[in-house]
Amino acid sequence: PFLLLSFPVDRLESPETLYRALKSYLEEQASKNTWAQPPVVELRLTGILAFEHADLDLSQIKLLAEEALHPLLCNVKDTSSANTFEVRVSHMANRQEIERCVLQELLERDARYQAQSAHWARAALRLKELALGGSSPAEVLEELEDFYQQVEGE
Image (spheres, rainbow, N blue to C red):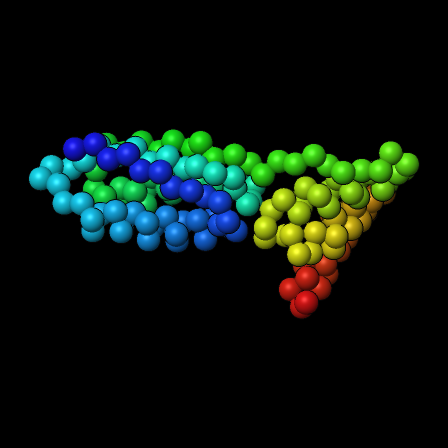
């Protein structure tokens, strides 16, 4: 038997959320189908990711499919898209404003950082300033740890 599955990744806010939803979907598919022989499975990921594409672990996805469906052969095709948008910057902005705006908009594309994108953008620029200003690695790390504690406290 040949099983072609399509799994939409839209509105799944993190890789972990995607893996949990996919596991549930695959288990549902396994319970619907009983095969005399192991199937050949093709799993297609479709839609637009709400997080960075680089954070998607295809080997983890393949493992989930293999555990749920016990296929003879399993092929995962990632046809999902990254959440790319045009960065909106005023033509009157100076270099620092453009840099902050670009960082903030990039962070807004990842659902995990969206609510605090302005804070993360300021932190990234502060870390850049420290690194370029000759601060020691310990000082940069301390600044990052302080920022992370502030974010976790909010």
